[in-house]
Length: 79
Image 1 (cartoon, rainbow, N blue to C red):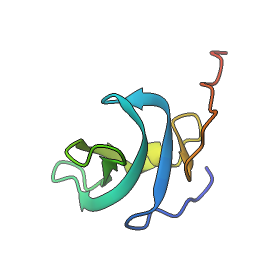
Image 2 (tube, rainbow, N blue to C red; image 1 turned 90 degrees about the horizontal axis):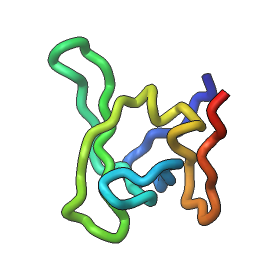
Image 3 (tube, rainbow, N blue to C red; image 1 turned 90 degrees about the vertical axis):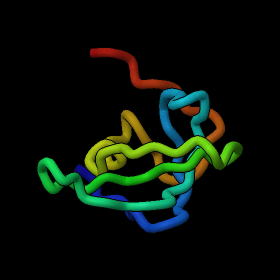
């Protein structure tokens, strides 16, 4: 697994649309009360009212997220 920088306000692109958007900023972090897993709060770049949490491990999966804003990402073909 490639280690990626999960700092506040860093820019990310989702391979698939999430809540209608693909470009996000990290706007928060917290640990799950259930299992202590790190959760990352994402905010849609074009709609600041769209906020949700994803697992930090999902942010390091290049099949789900890519650091920076990318304009032409294609989902990986199923194997």
